[in-house]
Image (cartoon, rainbow, N blue to C red; front, side, top):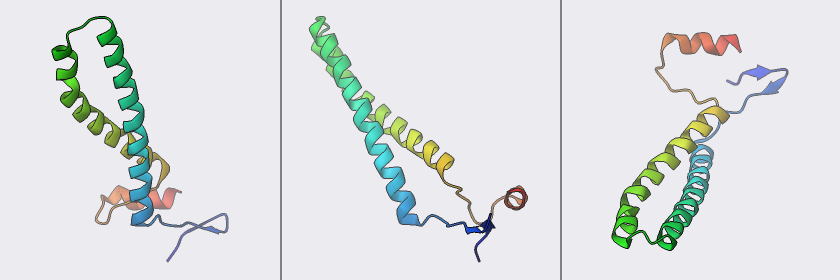
Length: 99
């Protein structure tokens, strides 16, 4: 059973498509954040900040980058796809009929 808008069928995104959409966005966000963090570490090293202080923050920053990139990718995916869960609140049905 598919809904139609202006005569065009609405496709439900498959699980693999959603997974890939999330994964490549998270990888891109992690890469960008890691490059920016590496540049900051390089500048701090060039300025003479002690290595134990700068490189001691790497595990914490890596964890923060991982969490942030997952959140950013998930937020984009929620905005890009119409994701609905089974057993959702009754307003979910109202939302479907408003489209």
